[in-house]
Image 1: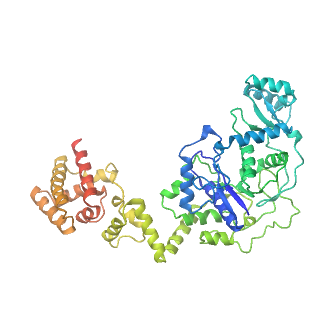
Image 2: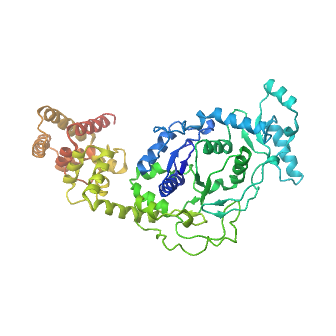
Image 3: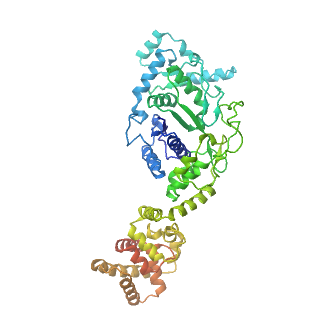
Length: 513
């Protein structure tokens, strides 16, 4: 059975490129009738972010991409954190040492820097002069016993011949060693593996049959195949996904907040629309010349034409995840890098909302998501009734009256302008009077629109203030916005507790002026 894996590094929030990689692994596993697992590649302790793992799991759950094995689910491939698999990497490193495919290197960082500079000046493309390869076994043993720090390097002069391979996306690949360092490091001096050793060992030990990962790893493919050959184990099938670009053509990065999936969740985008958007980027044509930094597919292959795939969808076709799985073919991806177009996401999102709201179950799901984000379902029902005909769509509700869902920002420019014409004394008297009356309302349990309206009229008359002053002071405290439902309706909808809290907060602010 096919087994795929999504193996992110917990170095920050999951970005759109990572979500697309997880999506394609999910799609392809389902397409092949197989499964996929989540593996956390946390061997770089200097970049580890503790909350990142929970963030990754949360994003996958939000997107509906349920992995079959991994953290929180278990499985025969466990443990799923590379930091818990160090003994395994050490065992494989020893196999490579014993077979002569690897050796210990004791060169210090300063020594390596000098060697690289000398090689570069001589015109050599090598990055290391293999000094430690020529150490005797006795010398190596003596230095290890003495406690000298060392790394383990692959002996690239002793690797078996590479077999031809066809990338699932890019087709037949002609290898080049450009970009691969001389005798690359497999095990670091801190006894943690590099990505190259850890990923190869884990993919083999976990029984991974297909590896779908970003195009940035394509230059490392020769090294990984060398490791499989040195270990005498069969490699999985590889597919490399063209890199996603920002609208301005720059490479997407975790350092840019606008590509973090968490930002899209906060903005209220539909997960189905985001998946639809990511799945369709670059889906539909194939080119005979790859833009890969490693090499070009073989020009003799006739299976990779420049014509459009007949069954490929338009870039804004509305598709659910099951529909995507049914129609998707990795061979239909373009080889070029593609920029994400936010206007397409907007189009897709609107139509996914319309599709969901066309059924009772979908409409109920939308309503429940809104109240889960903000308050109770009863409160949402009251808000909808209070807003009457103001909303055009369900998404308009939080935007029209955000104060029903979150506390108002009394420091905003709009909020400050509301009370600027009024004296501090008028504000204090209004708030103190209403707070006294509301304490009685709270105790008596008479919290209804008619009772609140009558009470407000009585207090306004007793204070002798103009209605505009009285109502604006209360509206400011409750909403921080000039427009909205009447003050009695707002108080009724907010309820006793939230109304009292907001009035007390506003009153406290007047006492500090």
